[in-house]
Length: 57
Image (cartoon, rainbow, N blue to C red; front, side, top):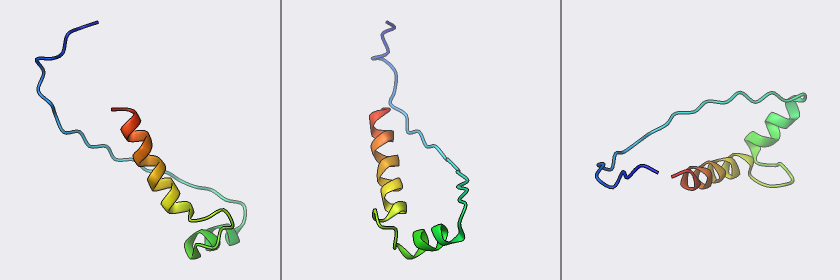
């Protein structure tokens, strides 16, 4: 292992983009209206992104 204790802490940012393809237009409508039976899809994906970014630091 290399000793990196002397290195300065730096702020890092990342930008990501995704394309989601679905077979039915009703799926996109349900996501937008938050009527998916398993819950709020977009909020869960945001929470998962945060949890995974914390795990990788």
